[in-house]
Length: 557
Image (tube, rainbow, N blue to C red):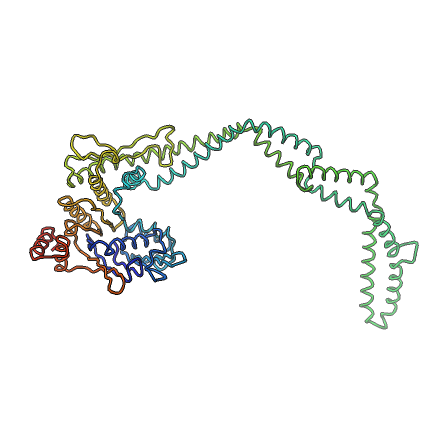
């Protein structure tokens, strides 16, 4: 449950601290005092979108913190452990809003994203807003409520992913079938291009090799002449070569080393030079004897390079890319030439995905039907106690038209109700009045709250539009919920507030600027606040006596 809440510089709140307790807590106060601001702050703390306008006027930042205590088996502890954010059984959330910059979130003093705050928040707090009765008219909201109670959240996510896969497969198959006519023209063009490139038959690396051989052929005479001349000077049997000179000099050194040992190093270097000359001479010989590139061979190379250039210009690529381009054309032809093969493969995938989709839908539908029966009974029972004697509430599962493949499954959910006995239940947007819709919405929230995993339930003025004995029944139901966990309710109704195990009063001061304050009421203060709620600012002794009687009869004193 939520143990404490601190709000700083948020909206009209300057500094506010609240220590909450278990069971049912009622928050009361005059209109505009800032009660709903407290709920807004909790929503932001739990990952809702934040706005710079929520920062108190004249300030650069706002901060909201809350501490939660969790039972050892609560799913929030497992979530914290999975995220590496566990800290025994305590959980502290913090969010800082900053003007001109993004907000920052923290879980147990570790940086957290808004998504993480929201995921954890769904396990910690279940908030029911004052306008939920309006959203209740939307079928997607009705479906979400039922699936939440049925435990279908993860299954619905899987169905959505499966639906997207089916949609993409259908689109691909449709595209393949639609393009057959245009493909015929494209096939002719591609085949023509492929044939002319195949005549050249380019090979990977051939272009570079041809260029290299062309450059060598253009300088072949010069290469042979230079190599022959150098070879003649280095090592020739016909002339006095450099090698001959080295041999004579080495021989003379051999005769003198006996008298000058330091000449041994010189002799070594000359010997190495002789070896290098021998090796250089051998490497020059293939160049001297190279007869590979005759005039006919050089002409072939020139013609081949010209063909490369011509085709490359036509296809607007580099000559060395022709071999790769030919393969690309072949690949495209393969995909166009036999679309039926790909269509058959995709159709098989579509069938498998459809089987998976309908299997998921069947499980979801089974879960919905199991919980719908009990929800109908429980909600009908509560609306009877809310002044709709003989009224009824029904949940209908309606198969979708067509192939039944929708993002939300193959059936829609529709809530129906009747406010009077003997009148068939109709969709909520057809025959239900505003007051009846508010009561039905409240009944649904009370029933769903019983199934909530969150240990804390917050109701923000959900009793709007009701009063009298109906409001008294609502107060009793909230107190019953509080016995199972923690319930916090903002209310303007005396009949609801008297059932709170605890009561806080929210006030607004304008002495030194607008500021919201909150304090827990003692028994006597609570009597005075209930009296104010009954009669307004003019509280009499009779009103105080009546307030005491109401609190006593509700078991709150």
